[in-house]
Image (tube, helix red, strand yellow):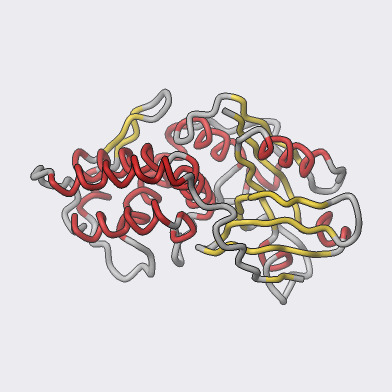
Length: 270
């Protein structure tokens, strides 16, 4: 079902934007202000930023339930690397950053927590933990979402993804498409249109069915991925490129599997 082709360079950040981000990293490196995080190391954060600006696919949720925020952070590093660096610098130095319409701050408790062995970069942990901590505070429940999606605890919901697209990426044209049960191609077609317009698209899937070799007896929404492009759903098999778990993949599956394991898409256009 899954082919792990790495299409080198196809989805990397614009080199001109990367240069501006690298200059901002140098400025951050030269600053002498102390950090606001008790157990995070500035030199490690700087190294993480350099790595992700030059290769956004290194954004990694590790073993944490951060798939939704990680997909959004990946797109920020890929499409707006300077803004990504500025967000991380502000969060590290003062414990918060200005989103599109809200100021987002890490709690004192989070900033004083030990980083530990989370199998993810310190920069990723700093941002993703802050975003996850603030989700329920910033974004009200979307009452028209399907009951199953509204009631699943711990999973990033569709309205939270819409909120992060607006707050973190600054995109105001945001849309949600339900795909499960009454499936049609609108969800994937809208994703294609958003990507072609320079925007972003994210999909809520059953990870064990779409990404693994051990599909569950009863599909359930469990994981957010970033849809990158090269989407072909007009014939069987369907295929498309994605980011997930710090990797670039090309998925190929029969149409029935797409219907079975795709729950929703959320798109954003600048």
